[in-house]
Image 1 (cartoon, rainbow, N blue to C red):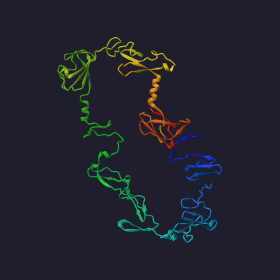
Image 2: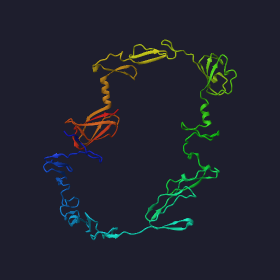
Image 3: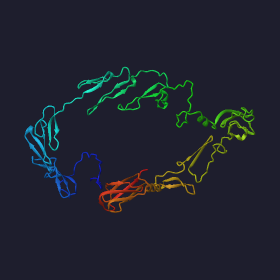
Image 4: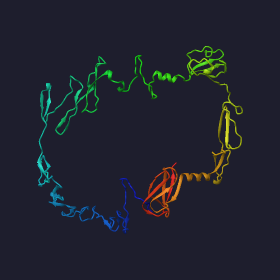
Length: 499
């Protein structure tokens, strides 16, 4: 059974390889532009809207030679539209001529030499040229010309460079770096580009960076290439290439550095100071029994906001008792009062399964949280769902349940039948329905809320898969288009949401 297509197929200019045209013994009812292979005549036929037209089997189409058809060339009197073909001579001297609607006759030799309007061959070196005004073509002698160059020599003395001579510009020995490039010729104009090769120039250090000049080539093409002079002191550092070794400044500073924006940018002092001030900066231990270092009696004015100390020996800090492990953090520069410090105490013990403290977890008994399992060790509690030990397994579909959480008022764990899950998933991810009206355009409203859907069509009478143009016109609709009208209910669409 052949695959049924309900709409045209667009190959987008691609090939249909290994294609065989339908073989048929009895010609069917004609459909305009339909092509078949007639087993009776062993020819290909197409339907032109009124009858079957047969290809002649030789690669041409049968026709009278009128305008718009390709004739079968059988004699030299056959016409091609309003023009004609003529044949003269035999064998290697046979010529084929074309008579145009304005009665001009052009003759082209199939073999041998080219001939002009007078049917004569040219001589060696001649050219075929149009005579103009409908006069055809004729042989003419090739024009002879050459270009004589006038080159300026030493002291601008003209020197003749004749045809056949070689004209060459060598690199200057007194001004190294100046050289000539390949010439170009357009019409009668010969261009000789002159360029600057800095690699051939001598190397030397400038005597004065402010007054000595640097040769600079700002243009990229040879035609517009120019050389300017630029002071070394005027060349911005941003035009230099990337460094290939460490940059040594010899003890000098880099000044006027902007604020950084990227991770690998250099940072100026102001930017760094703004980041550091107010951040936690660990200064070491604090002996509260001896006030060492002095933080509460005569504290140093150099103490900055963010400086922090850890208590190593218990005692009093101002009027507050502190223990080993407590953390003291300055809230402002040069603090002198207790409330200008923050004390982070470290005197809370590790929790056990029955004692409230760090890491304590209370175990719930049976109730709404059935199925939860808790284990505890050294202040760490592990909570998980213990389905294997809480729910017995079953092979009956009707007895299979999912453990789900009710997000409503109860907040209980509920049992959800597997059939309910399947029904919800099917309704949320798939659609099936027949076309509801006849015609060539059929809209299926799937309400799946996305254009990412796959669509399959089948014939409701034969149950076979069919193909048509499918367009996803929105997040909830698909339009199926067929080349010819089909009845309501003739096709069924199966639409699946891709998740």
